[in-house]
Length: 242
Ligand SMILES: NC(=O)c1ccc[n+]([C@@H]2O[C@H](COP(=O)([O-])OP(=O)(O)OC[C@H]3O[C@@H](n4cnc5c(N)ncnc54)[C@H](OP(=O)(O)O)[C@@H]3O)[C@@H](O)[C@H]2O)c1
Image 1 (cartoon, rainbow, N blue to C red):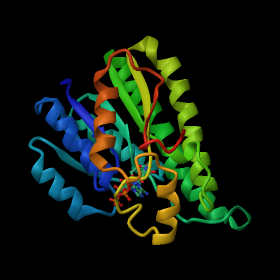
Image 2 (cartoon, rainbow, N blue to C red):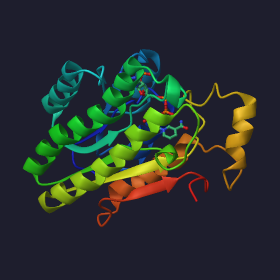
Image 3 (cartoon, protein in one colour):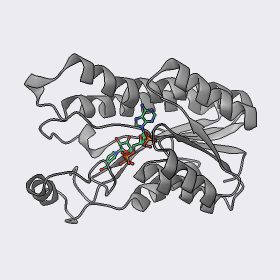
Image 4 (tube, rainbow, N blue to C red):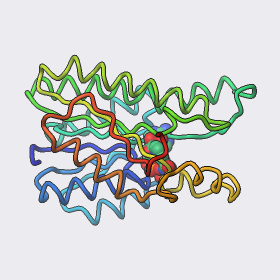
């Protein structure tokens, strides 16, 4: 797996932490981890302390300045080989007729615009170096409806299309682009789901449970390591999007 730097956005969150740990373990420490966070400094610092050779980058990826800072801080350290576009938000949960323009803009800025522009910027560096792998974190909700998740769903569905487009255009330049589509995973994003809604969701999951962040990390690791995977959307959802 080794080839300099692996960037994980949202490494302070549940899935990002598991992904960063997995990449570190699978690469035998050869890939240095750039651990991105925004407000979750304590979680990011704890992770950084646990992963030798890793370094932290704080950035609000919903802004052009934040994205530029992430790129610049990674390039100061070396050559990006892996980018995991994991940072994301799912709130606010607004029913379709109550969608606010500000929440629409916020969801699109972080969940769609940020990963697409980071794919463009890191993709250029990877193409120039002749190799790279990008994994985007989508969601089962790209394919499954849930009241209050219209804009979130749209951002993830669009991210999947962008994944395929970038895979098509960057593949010939040595850069593979794939996505994972997790189902409901036990992280802070799902911690406050009300018991009644949780029961309804579980009724749609064939294996009958939420997943662990490590299940998503395994899938991300697979897409990084499998050199014939390009343009794939790997579902890790316990059988929810069937
Ligand atoms: N949990 C699930 O059930 C589930 C299912 C499908 C897909 N996903 C996707 O998986 C990804 C990770 O989710 P998670 O469950 O690990 O959630 P999480 O624990 O809430 O983590 C979210 C991450 O996004 C970062 N973030 C939030 N706002 C940001 C901003 N403006 N700029 C930069 N980073 C920002 C957070 O950083 P700070 O904490 O440092 O602010 C945090 O690291 C998301 O893309 C989510 O849509 C999650």
